Amino acid sequence: NHILIKIDIAQSPYKIHEKGLTFVGENANENWALSGGSWLIEFDKKHIIPANTGDNGCVKGDFKNVKYSEIKPGFVLMEGNFTKTPTVGNFLILRHGTRDHAGMFLFHSKNTKLENINVYHTSGLGILSQYCENIEMRNVNMIPNPNKNRYLSGHDDGLHFMGCKGEIVIDNCDAQGLMDDPINIHGTYVPVTERIDDYAVKCKFGQDMSHGLLWAVKGDKVGFIEKKEMGTLSYGTVSSFEPLDVDHFIIRFKEKIPAQINANFVLENLSWTPNATITNSFVGSNRARGYLISTPGKVVIENNVFETSGSAILIAGDANYWYESGAVKDITIKNNQFRFPCNSSPYQFCEAIISIYPEIPEPNALKPFHKNIKIENNSFNPSDYPLLYAVSVDGLSFKNNTIKRSFAFTPLYPEKQNFRLEACKNVEISGNNFSKDVLGKNILLKGMKREELDLKNSELSVDVVK
Image (cartoon, rainbow, N blue to C red; front, side):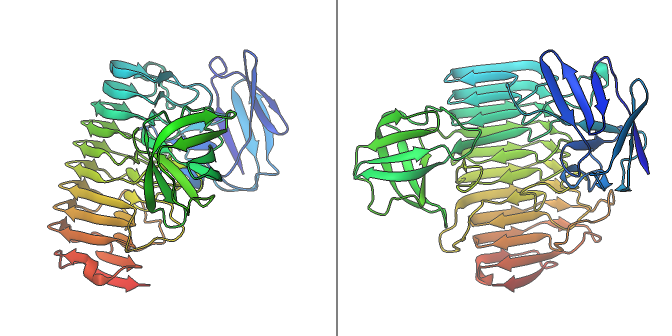
């Protein structure tokens, strides 16, 4: 039982030892060993991550007793008790090291335009934009270098926008071979740690990759959000922002803050929330998802092609782990192609081809978190059951889409419904065209009333659970 890999020692010099490999460079040594998850990613010759690999692993077995040896320079033999191995002839990404510097960093800038740029590799995020206003990107591609037969383009996300405002315009931008999401647009929730007085609270950055941000300025509008149901209690206007260190700060407000505000709340800066338009772009096979959208601004995702390994689109929101805000208010997803690779391997939050998955400990069907999400006139080619997963949405429509089954991979998800909806209101599913061999043709409602679903596709069955 063995795996034999060939490594270009000129491009990736390494040392071999009993615990694995150490990749060496100028003032750098990074260790790598076989593991069962996301640190070994397999691609086929068409640059597609094979089904049921990704974070589920392309190798399974006993990783504690692997024997590493070099049979000749550039040829590494790994011997052990394996129950699953990669396909011979495919390419492997041996991920090592932590994310460090972005390829480009846009910071507190205004009216920035990038166009006709190929980013072939970054060791952190691709292009990171923080606290910028009005960003336009046209023909900005995060892709492996075709002249070097590369399969890896970037260590993490491609185009990452945090705390921006105004208009984000992304057009004709391709992404492939990334080790995280091609586009991520979000803000940052900050947990309240202490109520200082009736006008001020002490906060901290909740995620360990957020440090030293100028999170607010005088005049910013801030929402007070309760963690369990993720509902907004009230709003305040910032009068001052006082950093205490890189992780902690005090925010003082012009108005009295509600008496309920304590460590069970987070804050959201609503003054730094953008609109976004994403058009005419290609999302190839990347480790994880396609587009992550968490902004209350107006969002249009139109005329794009998705071949993502995980969910093509994730609409999230989380005040308990990643702290990526916020609730969406107006999203239109139309005239896109969701091709057969979509959601073919499991990743975090990837419950369906389109996954609306805010992390809400106690979803309240009477007070949904997200609003007004329209999914219309798209084409889907699923090999598996899950098309749409949605939690806590008021105003969700899935209309006039074409669903034609693919047989590219064997169904792998335990969930056997096309639509799983939890704690939602005002849902419409109508005018969709399902081919005869589409799996399931069914809907599961959880924690919501049947009357909240307006169903006009008569071929779909409905089950309701508490």
